Length: 372
Image 1 (cartoon, rainbow, N blue to C red):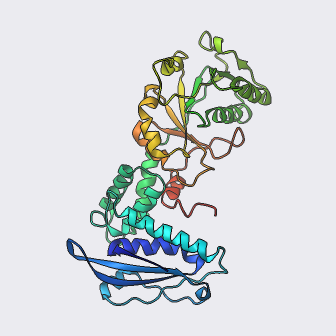
Image 2: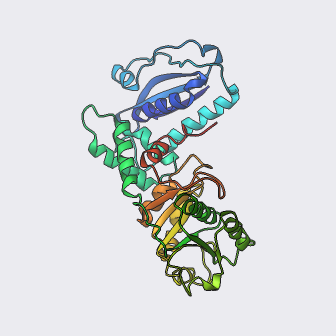
Image 3: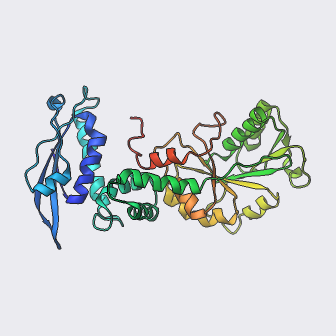
């Protein structure tokens, strides 16, 4: 059995998230008013008792909302949810439940508290933070949603629209891959830039029937030239020698150029990476980043990224993690459009045009989106 004390507003969000996350596992919750919050005589605290009772899984009892509990100032009933046979052991469920409650308590210390945002928006804020959306961006979403709340509006619908509209404004329009275009792919080690290049090459060659050439400037990674050469062989397209990239262009082909990994902490002995890229005079520079990289780590590298002056973003590894908050960090801090996302490993699959509604739904339901 686990007992934790929340403010009334946060308890409402806690109950909602616990029911959504644990409801199918027959969670029993008891709530009890336990006095006022120190320093805030008007603010009530609610004691939440949670436990797992497998025997009660098939005995549903109608749930009461936290609003009714606080309004009545009365002892609430036991709340159960109906489910099929438990999929996990009681020990596993208890650990998961304790983690969820602890997450709620930690969120009370975040920049947005139950006292400076609408309580109905707090669950969404917690989801955004859990999805690795930077705190300042999550807070701005909540503030924008609060301004748009009206009588009868559903807070969850409002903030989903706010997040979706913001993402939509940061998505690139179609890129015209005309003959003669030079496209460079840049990114940190492991970001997936070579794989992204291969996907675009396949799409241009097979689907759009365009003439494509590949080239690589990567003289650091072992077998880098062999890797891109393998893609060229599969697609039956030419592979340009690195020394000839900047000396001439073919007006009838799209040139896709792979580059070495961006040194996020360049030393004095490092060659000027930005100068090397811009020596190509590229028309399009894709900055490829992995959503598996923490948003704060991406933000720390913004100055390095910005020095290269990328024109478009490409988010990779969406298939590997459930938390895609790095997308908001990159589009906001770099202020350049997101052109593509990719959710398949290596050179398989395709690049996809970002769907702002899908990304917003994932950011607001990161835990529910996981396959467990």
